[in-house]
Length: 170
Image: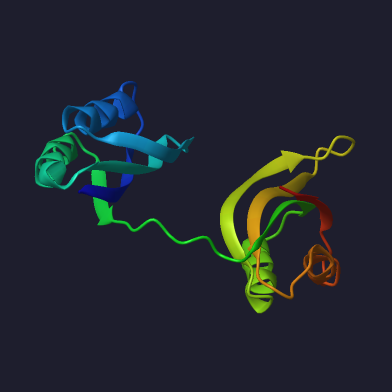
């Protein structure tokens, strides 16, 4: 029987870090299904979904424990493959004046609509003409039944400091 695991990895970034994880997974007959990994402010943060035979799970966990001795934090979570949900995918790009609390305001608007944030990337960008810091975010969302892209766009445009919204269905 196959087991499905999600690995959450945090630590100081360095060359060969992902290779070490991949070697541990492969050595225990694991298959790397998907991942999201990023270097941010000198740190590495990663999520990986792996599957492997149930009888190899304990040995993989032991191998990952050894990697923690090298300064990584690794959380292993049993995962179930989720049944398809009745959602509409939506990709959203936001641009606006940067300010404290902007992520809170964005997530509050989405939660009020019961929208699921599946991916969120954000950064500060310099405005082309003024070099003023602007907030930019790229989100992948799951819209529940009854919520439309127009509802999402309207929520952001109605904010006290409205955000420019670019929507695309994916």
